[in-house]
Length: 258
Image (cartoon, rainbow, N blue to C red; front, side, top):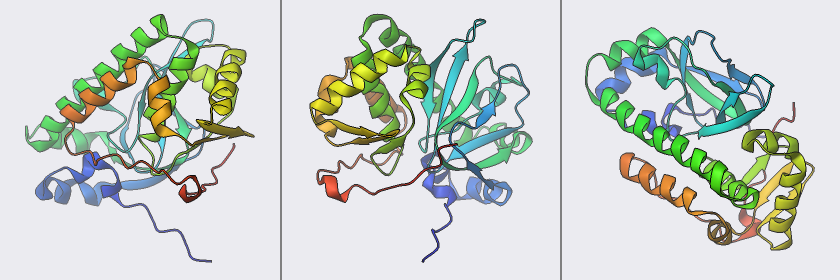
């Protein structure tokens, strides 16, 4: 059996967009780390020591209430990085970061990223543009959670997630999705069933496969389109999305369930 190739730093589009001289300074300090499903990256109020650049994983930032309830406020994947607050003179974050799709990320020590940030070069420019993209995502999530149905929220969340993957599959339970959206599991079950009945997704034993991307976009609210348009404008380095029309051609990926 052939061994799966090691992820390359340039699978993260943010790292790939850096100038060669910046890459030359940063890449020797990159450390590849596995990110198992549901692993905790950062806890609220804890000191952050690294900046993470996902290659084939997705990290969800969640806000936790005093009663334990949680809601995802944004997702980070191969378009960017986790740890932007470290570069804004912060040592921690009020949110919690959890891996929602298993994979890998490269990480850099906080001091190395800040050294490059303070050069006021390409890294600074990309960081500022990426921060604006995150602000848009957080703001639109707040609007969506307040004004749109669970069905629409689920569509938006699925679209944002698969935009950050090279395949059309997500491995997670309905309870986990409910925690992401801040809604009851029963609401997610009903919404997922509707999508399955319309042939938009298939869902079995925690594995979600998107079958009809175009229809998923149609069923979503305008919030996804707002975030997508703003992200593409701010981050022109992102590759054009490729839609898989042949369902049989969608890669089958087995992800950890623990």
